[in-house]
Length: 454
Ligand code: GLN
Image (tube, rainbow, N blue to C red; front, side):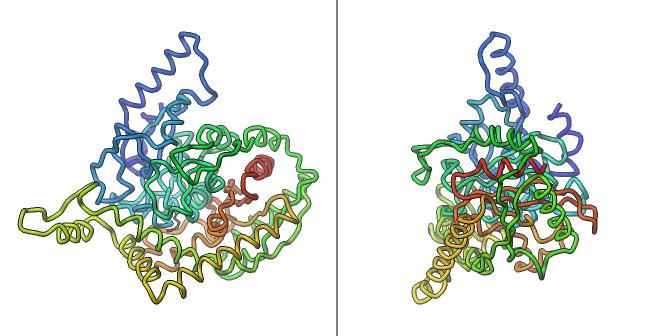
C-alpha cells in the first residue's frame, strides 16, 4: 500500500531519491514467513520506513543529495540500517536531503527540492525534508533522519510530524556519512510520539564500531510515551527558555507556543521561566564549528575513493582531477561551508574563530546544566517561523541559517531534544512544532511530556 501511495504522490512531493520496490517486498514477505512459521517478531516487524540518504544501506545507492556521490553503492549497512533490518522493518527507499545535510529546506539537494505536503509551494524543512515529508504525505509511517543542527526537528515542525534528536552517542554513527562529527546524530521520525519511541528503541544502544557511542542502557522511552499518554504531568517541572522569542519569531508561532505552555500547565506541569544567556551565541558558534568539521570530513571526496571522477583523461595530474571533480560535484552551499571551515581552522585565525566557538559551546553546556538543576525539561518553539516558500531564502544564507535558532543549542551540548506537533499557526494555517529538551540520556522525560501534550 505504501509503495502504491509513493507511486501516486511522490511525483509531486519528491520525498524519495530511490525507491527499493523489490527489496521492500522481499523484506515484507520475510516477515510474513516468520509470522506464518510462528517465529517471534518485534513490535515494528513489517512496518515500512523511509531512510535518509546519508545512511548507508546495502543494495541501494547512497548519494547524500550530492552529484558527487551519484550512483555510489556502499558495500555495507550502517549500524542503524542493520538494526532496522534485524527488527523486521521494511526499508522503502532513501529520502531526499540537502547536500551532505547542509541546509534547512532540502533545496540544496542536487536532485531537486522536496515539497511540503501541506502546501507544495513551500519547503518541508531540511536537511531531512524528504524523511519528514514522506510521513506527512503518508508515503511511510516511520522514517530516519539525522540532526546536526536541527535537521530532524525543524522538518518535523514544519510538516506537522514528530522528530527526535537523541543524546549525542545514543545512536551509532557507523555508516552515517559525516558532516560535523561532534554534532551529527541519527534519530527517529514518526507521526506519533509512541511510534517515534518504538523506533528509538530499535536504533539506539551501544555500538563498538562507533568510538563515540555511549555504553549505557537505552533510556526507557516506550514506557515513558505510554505513561505520558495518560495525560498527567503532575510533579513535572517545565522550563520556558526566555531567549527563544522576540525578533524573527512569527506572532502565530509565539501564540501557538503560549497555548502549548498553558496546556502543559493544565496537565499538571509546573511552569518555570529560565534564562540561558549563552544560547544567543549558539548560531554563530555552530556556523564555525560545523563548517570546520565539514571542511575536514569532506576532504575524503578526492575523486579516487568515492563517487564521480571528472577530467581523468590521462593528461591531468591527480590533483587536477580532484579539483575538477570537487568543482563539478559539490554544490554552492557545500563549497561555502568548506571555505568557511578552512578559513576558521587556518593558522592565525584558529584561536579567534574555532577556539572562541568551542568556548561558547562550553558556556551553552553550562547553561543547560544550570537549567536542568531547576527543571525536568525545557520547552521552546522548534522553529521561529512556519514553512517558508520555495526560493524565498535561497539567496540569503543567513536567513536560511536562522531556521535553526532554537534547535542548535541541544546539538552543541550533546543533549536530546524533540519536536512534537503543536497545531496550526493562526496566521497562515501551517504546522507549528513544540520543542522539548532534556538532559543527556534522559530522553524518557521529553517523551513523557511530548506524549502528554500530543
Ligand atoms: N540547517 C543546519 C545546517 O545547515 C542543520 C543541518 C543539519 O542538522 N544537518 O547546517
